[in-house]
Image (cartoon, rainbow, N blue to C red):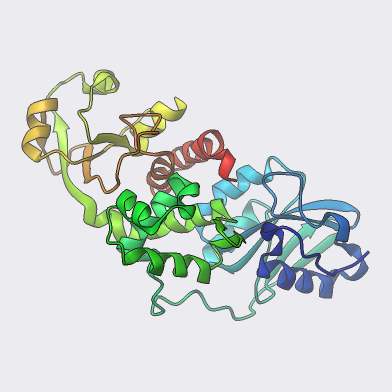
Length: 343
């Protein structure tokens, strides 16, 4: 029985893990076990594994935890016996939700909520500052968000040339090294070996990107709301043949990808003009319309499996940002079905 860390694969060497183990060890003593020979986890959902009072704990590492991430953490908890969220920073509202869902957590400074009968630990009030907005990190500027999206859509892109990355993201070449440095700074990009990089926490990066995208980039992409002049639109919308460079996002993408959601709001990303939209689809501008048009911001890949649907990471982000429980459940299904290889 030991609390020492074994320097194994990069995923298990996350610097936060050692801090979290120290916080737990101070409270649990010999009830906490960390197996030197098996410091990682065989379960794809877990970044590491601990044993407390003889029971296995799946540890999931997050840079930050916000309320919109709790449904996905709950879905992860449903797949393991016991879950512990380790994070640099957890917002107060996210802590409340985690407690309601009975999801254990520890943050970087030692705030703990850990319920595993007969062990009950609740430490709150240790000051922990959220990441400052003043510190410029080029990974999450409006331009950086476009680059990170390409990495989420194709993680192997991090090991191509800066020129290829810039072309895919439709940004200047000089942007790329700044974004790469920003991702390294926050632990989202690690060196796999001398000539290759890896994204060690795909889900954590996806959730951070979703928050930043919804806050910084998406509002500026909005063009106009429309409504269809077809009175049967709600029944026939799925048969509409979107032209090139137009894609269903949000709830409509959720329907096509999962069949779990019947859309009420129809999000479309496009490079078509307003005139083209009116002519091609018989849609007319309406401030209260249920068709929301956004500017497409990415370079379509020849490997895209669904030609008229946004890439899965963007569908996930659109749905998670709604705050609607059904939409967020659909986002979780999309993650599990279309992005599991990145978990």
